Length: 381
Image 1 (cartoon, rainbow, N blue to C red):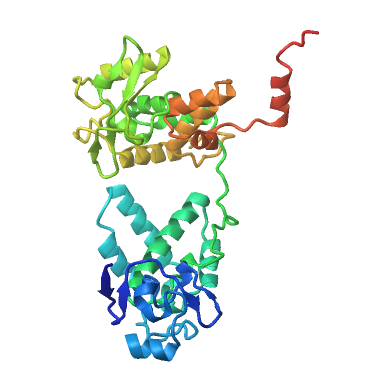
Image 2: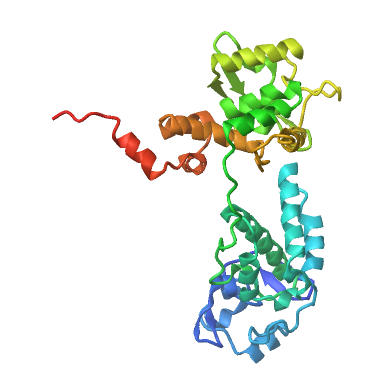
């Protein structure tokens, strides 16, 4: 069994807590086990046989003074959550991909901007955590990411003696989605054509690949001419450019996959190659003005944003749309489903690991559309 001492002088033993809460006469919930959250009950209380702890006074005489759970925050070092987040981020945000580090840092900044930031860690309760989650604007994935980071921060606060319990792991803390961000409307083909026309000429073929082949921004940036086969009209999705310009030789789900392209897409790529020539090992899309070997997803998104702003200037009867580059991939999936392509085939073309992911992007037909589908087959009596 591994033992350690917290900065506040409390001795801890790693293991699963067991025993009876002397205040309530019931078993301790492992997630709400106050000062002995990581303690092994049999090691702490051998005289109790692991079932009944001695009185508080006897425990303090044997093991040193520890705050009772009824005296919330007593005997703990005071520190504001916002300040503790800075030290936690400095120590824990060193592993993983650059995108993961940036995402973790962004979640910490959101916590520091909330009402929890000025609260003393030991004074935060379950109600405070629920109010924080209810204020998060976004979908379930956004709320879950925010809650996961908050739990990790408060776990570290408990281990370092700043809190007796982690309220983010308390009973009743669930994902709140009442303030979900309104879903942006889908981009039309006319709007798509205007935005693509406003893109630099050397980037228009990339938008075509995302719209008609479902490539992600990082996959478009990482595409090389050696992965494009004009004889079979196939594209091997293998190389990816991550955020920050990190090159990786495997796509999101870890396996290179070949996807088809229509003859029209192939002709557009051939025309692009005549304008931006390159060797087999060269990247397909490069900014001729920058001189760099490849683009990054941030470059693509920035160019798309600028084109989106410029596309509707002086166009009567059309309003600018808040479409992202990734929405082009959604258009690809929705178009396939609208044309009756089976969902499992759409999943394969989208290169999703689960069909549930594909279902989030697919088209939801109206009742009138369903009626038309039902009337297409003649009834033979």
